[in-house]
Image (tube, rainbow, N blue to C red; front, side):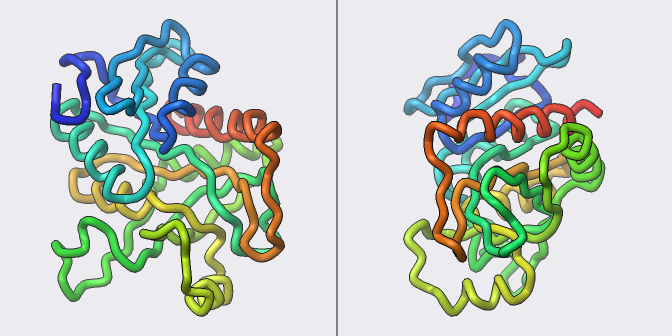
Length: 234
């Protein structure tokens, strides 16, 4: 048990999926895991452990933004021995070729700032995904017939962005989408020698202004969860 996770020793699996929304964690656990049991509800940040095709999996909410995710990932790794951590979440597309409901597999995650920035001082550390997970996720998406894009994303430290000039430069340089957590996840995984990946569903589009209707999100997010699970155990 830690300050933010109430699970007992042995209740957290080595493989952890990390949606930001705790209610999405519950939905994913009920939909994809067998024998899912609630193992954490501290501060309402729900976590569940069950099995998928005989493999133990924990699905733990991580909250919104890098500071929140950093707390959970630090504790999952240091106190519960998590080895594989996969973010499953939504993102906004930043390229015309990326469409609503597509999946983005984040090879790299650019950012202005993370909770780890103070460690690196003047160094611009380039956090990236685990190659084995990335390759397996791409293969899983192809096998499912899901439109998937592999490349760089932007992890923002604000939701209400007021830097259109920065967005223009990221679009110009091929950044596929924007979210708020992956850069810190990749940095922590590198620090502790663990495997990490972000599998993201495009829910809205920064260029076209389109947004995925809430009624359509569950089916699209299901593809993302299945890709993440396949990648973890391939």
